[in-house]
Length: 127
Ligand SMILES: [Zn+2]
Image 1: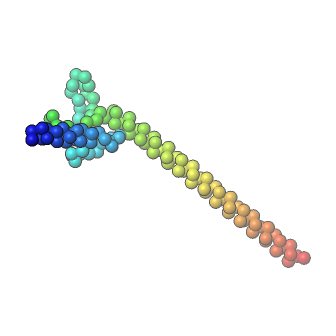
Image 2: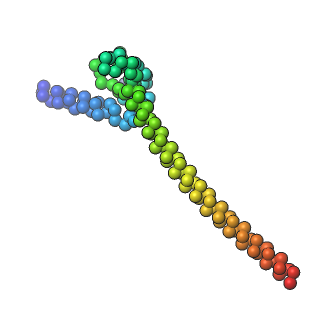
Image 3: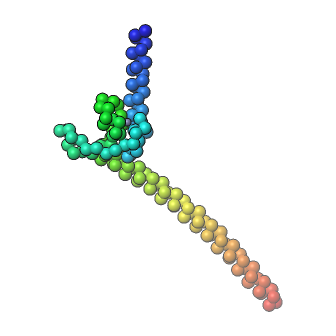
């Protein structure tokens, strides 16, 4: 009985751990616990005055496993995300320009045909 209880506890905490930073790329807005993320300043000797993201709940209940992310690392990720997004937009724009151009060509061809027909009609009338 005791054995199965401890086993389920391990499975639970493992699940929470894998959930912690999964899917959080760039600047986080919410912790997995549902709390909004705030910015705090580190006071440790290892990272003095370094800013990090954490939810209020984690600051009240120390020892609990909540989302943690350095602000500079999150911003670096955010920049690469924005760059990737910009690249996609540029590609889309390029595609749109190409389609627009080909539509223009079609329009020009139509106008060309019309001009020939008009010219023919005029000449026929003259004859
Ligand atoms: Zn939290």
